[in-house]
Image 1: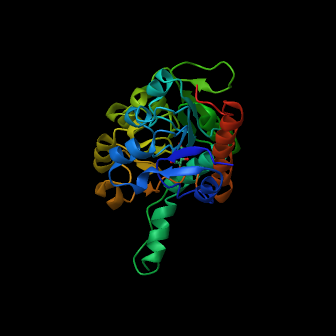
Image 2: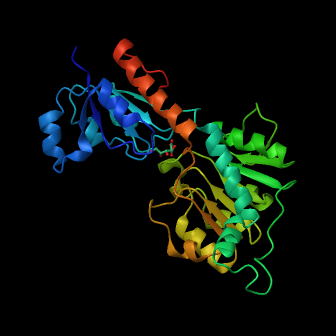
Length: 317
Ligand code: 8YV
C-alpha cells in the first residue's frame, strides 16, 4: 500500500520518537532539508495532503498556498500563533494542535520558576558552583516568602487554571486578568492588568501569544508589580515588552523575572543574564518525557484520524 504523502516543516527534535514514527507511517517530504524551498515545493508539493509542524515551526500562508492538495495541518504543541489560521480557513484546511496533555507540566514549571525566583534558587546554585560559599562574607541576598502571598494570573485558560489550582496548596489568594471575567471560578477578576499587578506579589503570564497579546505586559504593568514583585512567563516571550522589562529590572523598579520564554528566542538579552534577580530557562515548559510522548501521540492521532475519517481529534477552532 502506498503511504499517504505529508510535508514535515522541520525536525521535531524535542519529541522522543515523532520523526521515526512519521517516517514509518507516511511518505514524508522533509522541507527543511531543501536549500531552495520554493523549488522543492514546486517539485514535491503537488500531492501533499497534510502538513506536520510545531508551535515553533508554524505554517505561513505562503506555505499553505503552495500546496494545492492540502487538507490538514497537524501541529505538535498547543500554541498556534505561528500558523496562519485565516489562510487555512480560506482553503478549507483543518488545523489541529495538542491541548491538555501539556497543561500540568507547564503549570509545574511556572511554579518551579516562581519559587526559584522568589527564593533565589538559581542564584544560590550558581553561588555554590562558583565555590563562593564559605569563601566570602555572608551569603546570597535574602529571598521572598512564597506561601500565603498574592498570585496574579494573566490569562486564566487551561494552563492558568492549573497554575491557580497549585496556588491554593501554597495558601495563596488568586486573582486573574482575562479579556472577560469567568463565572465558573472562585478567583477575583481584575479588569485592569495594571490593577492586578499593583495587587499581586507574583504575576504569572499564561495567556496565548500572537498579535492580540503582544506587549500586553508593558512598562506600566511591570512598574505596578514593583520593586518587590516577580514576573513569571511560561506563555510566549512577546507578551512582555522585553526591553521595558530589562529597563525595569536594571533600575530596580521591578524586583525580578523568572522566564521560560523570550521575545526573540533563542536570543536572551545580556542584561537578563548578568542580573542576579532573574531565572532563565530555554523554553522547556512541556519538556518532560511523559508530556512530549503524549504530545507526539496526539499529533499522530490527529494525522491518523484525518486520513481515516477526514476529521481531526483536537481541532483548533
Ligand atoms: C513546545 C509550546 O515546546 O506547545 C507549545 O505551544 O510552546 C511548547 O510545548 C514547542 O513550542 C513546540 O514547538
